[in-house]
Amino acid sequence: MDRFLVKSDLGTLEGGVPESGPILDLIKSIAVGELTFLVIQLASSAQVYIQAFLEAEGLCLEHREGGADAHFESRGVAIEQAHSVMMSWVRGTAGWRTDVIWEKLVR
Image (cartoon, rainbow, N blue to C red; front, side, top):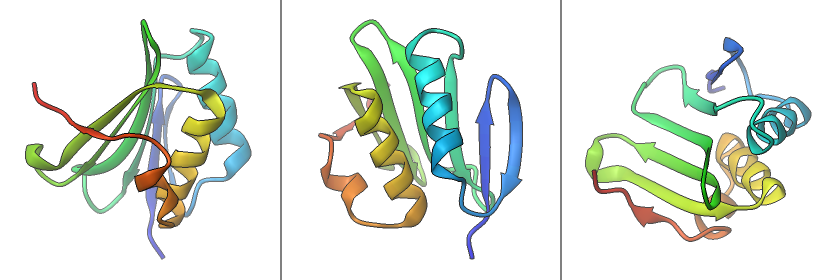
């Protein structure tokens, strides 16, 4: 079973698959400006993660699957959609790849 790091302004927790309810609460806190970020990362790789943060147009999701050439974002995501995508990523189900439009991140 994969182990995950869940990182936010509140700190870092390590464990198995994160529970849905607390992840939703963290995303809601980001959406209202109480927190600034949430990252769920494979404990075995700092380069494999999904994260949420707030921008002017709403919630932004990013995911990375290795190097900079595998770094993508989706902007203006609704709270429930961000939650669904992040939990699908954690569970390894296909929905997270198709439930939002991912664009390659170029910085």
